[in-house]
Image 1 (cartoon, helix red, strand yellow):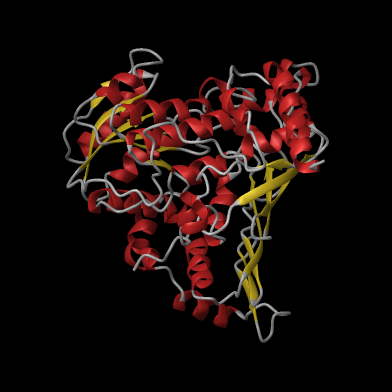
Image 2 (cartoon, rainbow, N blue to C red):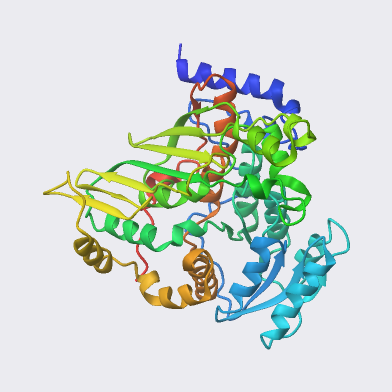
Length: 465
């Protein structure tokens, strides 16, 4: 008997039975395309579909953008994109009319034509996607809307860029892949951490062989967000992130840490994530915070929260590499993404401080002077080209601007994107897969091959010169 295949079938049965109870109307959980047959969990392409690996589309002289969702991330995107050459913001959308008016004013105050506004109900974003003068739909909506936004936009002939994660279920991951292959449109998850300066430098060092063969990586999203989850006035619209914490466990937000290390390790390009195990602590921090803030007898304190304080997921790749991914938005501790890259010739780590150790002295961290010299030598060309402007514009220290600038550069030049729909699906699949593992005593779950075998023939992401 093949133990791994049997374990996977048990998972699917358990998930199918429990799907109705883990809520928020995410009917794709453990349904439809999650029925993964055979030893290699890859769904066959439907007739007429073709791979979009290294997809290059027609160059766009000016990228005409429609922005959906004008909360914290969306409004920042409006401000930031106006500094990128070769774009026009043609339309903006939000369920709150005052946010639409605010975004329109930002665009006009910068000397541009007022974009069309959409705020006539929860589905008015579809009308934005239908506009003929839009090339790129840029979605900064709540998690459960990311896949619907992207799929509908692509079906209207638009390129789609959506915030993280791009999908919450395996069914949604496959829907993104199939739609991109059917429409031949780009679908990029806006993983800004791939463009942080240290992450870019370690990508460059890995490609130049400085760290040897990368065997292991550690990454995380550790960020105490309890105050924001419970903030009804300034927090997430309709308390969507708090509601998710009530209904789900596992790792709901894996891509900030995973994205950069996945690119460094050639995931989907020369290697792929094969299977994972995941475990979570009990939930304590949310309840403690709620009792302290709202009182022991408050509805917030009496509420049950499914999301464990710390989730740890361990992935093994087809080539025998490992990746540890952690998620904690509850504990009283400093922010960290870890970003640890361990190779046969050395190690690089960002959090809490930037540190590198290399042969022939791998047991000691480089001195500050030698570290600065090394990082300068292997500064990524993207950072060298637009890094100073990125720091001036802002957005998480500049990485948001580098991400936007690179996306627009690729669309204007007709180049493949650094992050494609297969990355969006693979990185986002950790959301449901980790929950499946946690709910079944941390047994292993196989990761679908969203590239349908094409990862074997595509080289890892190169360095932009």
